[in-house]
Image (cartoon, rainbow, N blue to C red; front, side, top):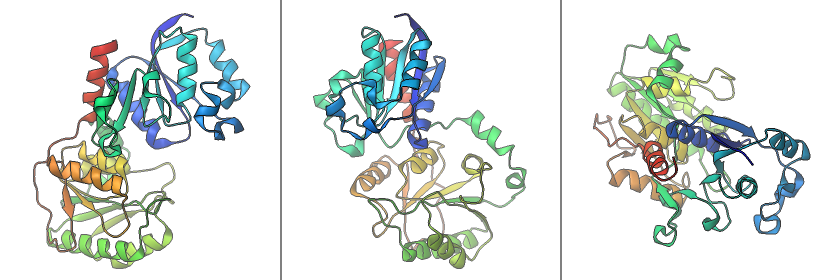
Length: 327
């Protein structure tokens, strides 16, 4: 099989892992192609039962990949379901294709050329020579992209006050973000914004329930702009806000939002109380606190400190390791 100097990104319907894959591919610098993956009902079975069989994807997709007539130099897969597909394609290439696996594949790590996991997963690096650990998630944050996003939202550029971005997550299968938590967050964030004569840019996420949004809006007593994720449709100002914000307050349940904000080198505060975060999340927070990448947001704060944090540049660091070994 012919091998082309190209990266294939195996992309399914998870935006978080897709963004990590795109960011890494762009940083590696080789042209990339997005292979959109859909799954058959076989994908519900554990990986050890199907090994690397392509039965987990529909025949139409298998035929589409075969019709390309070549395989790439590098495949980036992310998560449990796409990992076996990458292994099958590597086998077809007679092991010429290299696999970069983001997140735990639930398969033998030795089958992959690189496995990228966050440190808070607490996998022993000494056991795996191909394991690269990161503080948080890989990101797709770069200055040009952020500037272009701001151009889409001219109203944000008209704000002359200091700007505090409040990024809010919500409930998940393993975490609970209560109305009381949202109320505490809103009262403290509003107090800080008033004390600093700042505008609060509030952005909810798809996990922010209506009860949390109502608690935020009821208890925010300051100059603010409120962006409801359920109402912004395709006009999502998230990256524009990341670009223009002077400070960040991010809820502790979102590794991706925290990682992206910490990649800007601006002051970031993490709000975490009750059951908002898992133990893994809190290990991630502690890594950031220890490295001076972020500070803890507490309800007794009156102002945000304009400290100079260590800029998180994990995507660039990981890409450099990979390029030195296989490009």
